[in-house]
Amino acid sequence: MRISKRIIAIALSVSMIAGIVAINSIPASAKVTIKSGKKIVLTVGKSKKIKVKQKKAKFKTSNKKIATVSKKGKVTAKKPGTCKITVKVGKSSKKVPVRVNLANVSIKSVDLTAVDTATVTWNKVKGASGYAVYHSNNASGGFTAVNVNGVNSLSTKISGLKEGNTYYFKVKAFAKVGKKKVYSKAFSTTKSVKTYKLVWHDEFDGNKLDTTKWNNNGATGAGGYGNQELQNYQMKYCEVKDGSLIIKPQFEYNPRTKQINKNKIYSTKLWTNGQYEFTYGKVEFRAKLPKGQGTWAACWMLGNANNYGAWPNCGEIDVLETKWEATKTIIPQSIHCKRFNGMSSSTGNKYKETKINTATSEYHTYGIIWTADAITFTIDGQETWTYDPNMYSATGTGGQDNKQVWPFDKPFYLILNCAVGGTLGGNVGLNYWTKTNEKVPVYDANGNVMPNVYNEIYRDFMYVDYVRVYQ
Image (cartoon, rainbow, N blue to C red; front, side):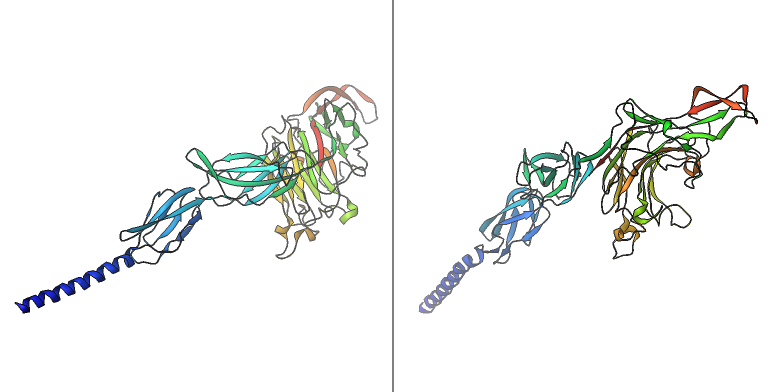
C-alpha cells in the first residue's frame, strides 16, 4: 500500500512539473514581436517585409486590392489606399497599418509647340488613372490645374499663354479610390519655358508692298542659281491685295505652234536681304501654294555670305517648297549646308516630305523653331522633323561646333518666291495654269507686228497671308 502511494505521489509530481513547463512556454511562443515593419508606407509596385521575432508567424491582408502579403511577410503595394496586415503567432496577433501612395511624377520636357502653347510631357506612374498639370507665370504661386484623364495620357498642351512671359509647370499623378481622387504625395520638379514675342512681321495689309521690309536687289532668276529654272524675276509680278501678298508667275504661249516661249517666263522673288536678318527664333509663313505645272514655290531663309562664305557654306533653311510632283501636295522641308546640299560634292540632302492635300486650295502655316542646338520644322503647329547636327558629328564632339553641318548660328534673311521649271519645278505645261484674256503681239524677223497673230498669257498665283518672326 505504501509502495503504491509512493508511486502515485511521484507520478503526480512529474505531472505537475510538466504542466508548469508547458504553461511557462506558451507566452514565449505565442506573443507577437515585430522587429521591423510596424508601420508600412509604400508606393504602388514596391515591397517591404515584415520581420517577426517568433517563428511560424502567419500573415493576412485586409484588402488584397490595396496590398498583398506573402507567407514570409513580404508586403507588395497594388493600388493607392490603406489596409492592415494581421500577423498571427499561435493565438496572439498584431495588426500592421499599410498606406499605399502613388509615386511622384517626373516631368520629361516642356516645349513651345506654338506661339501661345506649351506641350508638357511626363513619365508614367504605375497605378495612376490620370494626372494633374499645374501652370503659372509666377514661380511662387498662382498655379492652376488641368486634369488629364487616362493612364496612357502622358502629355498635354497648355494654350492661351501670353507672349514674352515665363511659365512654370509641375505635375501630380492621381488615382480614383471610390469617389475620391488620391494624389501622389509631392509635386514633380518644376520646369519652365519662356513664350516667344513677335519681333518682326508683315501681315500684307493695305494695297502696297512694304519696301522697307522687302526688296529684290540682286534677285536673279533664269540661269542665276544652277537649278535650270526659267523665270525672270521682276517686282511687277506681285501685288498686295485683300490681306495677302500675291506672287503671279506667268508665261507666253503660242497657240499656233503650241509652244511656251521660254524667253517670256516671269515671276517675283522678294527677300529681306540687307534690311532684316536674325539669329534663332520661331518663324511662320502662312501660305496657299500654286498648282501650275512647273511651278516651284518656296518660303525660305538664307545665311549671309559674309558669315561663312557663299552657298552652300552660308547655310539654307527651306521652310516650305513645292516640287515637280503634279498635285503640288508633297511639301519638302529641308536644310542645306556644306556637307548636305544635294550637289555631287556633298553627301546628299537632309529633308522630310509631308503630304498636305489642300496645300493649293487652303492656307497652311509652315514654320521652324530654330535654336542654338537644332532646327525643328512644323506644319500647322505640328512637328514634322528635326535637324540635329549632333547626329552627323563624331562621338564626343559637339555638332554645333562643326560649321560643315551647322552654319546656323549666324544671321539669316527671309525669302519668298515662285520659280518656274528647273530641277524642282520640272517640265512646264498648261496644266492648272489660268489662261488670261490678255494677248501679246508677235513680231516677225524684221521686227514688224504680225497681223492677227497673238501669244496667250497663262498665269498662276502664290498667296502669302503673313510672315512672322518670334524670339
